[in-house]
Length: 194
Length: 275
Image 1 (cartoon, rainbow over the protein chains, first blue to last red):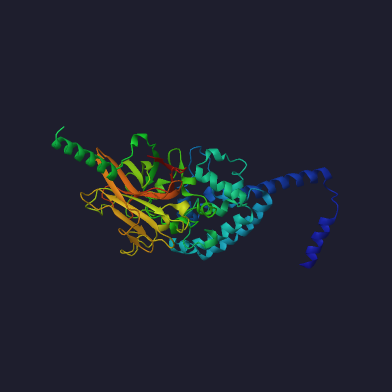
Image 2 (image 1 turned 90 degrees about the vertical axis):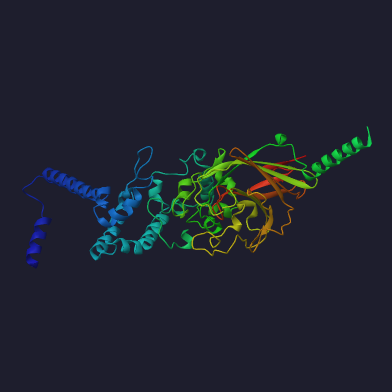
């Protein structure tokens, strides 16, 4: 076995006498494009709303709540889907998040939240994880669409305008206040989260 | 002029003077109106107001902002009334009319402060706990010791464990942790006594210090209630809040105002005019 690997390695290291360099580069280039594209396409497929709600844990719980909110349906028809808020846009952060998310497969296998009761029992823990993630990145995913600079507080309700002024003065980030805007707020939130 | 005529004239003069003294009624046509919206607050006591996950404006309150500062705009209140009428905040059922305007006028003379409220009392209430009174109108004045007295109006007296709140003690009235509210209330039932009371560790409907009197009339569906209380002093600006129990409502099923200020010959949300 060891000798076979050594032979293969030897062959791979040897310059090719049969194929021209340009042929090798061309095949290599297109194979690279194919595999890279395929990888990203597969990853993007896991970013769709359909993928997220293909599991009943998401479809029966958070998805139903989200459907009642402004991020799902609004006057202008702009919709933010699950991944817009829960998965970073740029490639490196997205990769890290996707690798972390693979741990959710373990939860799926174990049935951690496979009933309504189990979901409710875990809602606070799950929400706290996501709030901590959002806070640690200065609400980056919110800011893909929203920014203080882009806000016209004149067009906001007075209460929102005043609160956004306070938030800017105190260097707060979106998630400091906007918890439970797309899903139900969990029971038993900690005082510092309130 | 014979003696009889003279005595009649004298009697008339005395009577007129007496009436003047008893009801030194201001000429309300010359007193400006300030429109104040009252609304059904559901179960949003001070504990709710001070909890960030319930009320995001808590941060503003901590910085000294008033309720009115964020919630009164374009001649009304900017609350999410759907949320206030929802089961979570109104488990018993919300009234058909969630908010309506009250015209507030104020005037004063050397001894008294007069406050006149004009409003159309809506029907379609969700609670008819008071069989005797179709309408009750209350004004409360917090003193400076009441927590956030200049910001929250009556809310420092409204608690989640008070009568008619969900799962609360049926005998517990309004109360305030520090300080005192002065309270005056007019009831629509014939011959009902005007309350001159206070709210401190509990609510008392008598023994107050306001010297409160009140008169109310109904014309069509419009009520006009005029309160008389002793003048707190020219130049003073006092905080106050209103509550109206319409359509036989009782306890917390009232429409209330946020906290406003009344300036006695001074600037306030409502400016009392000198008579």
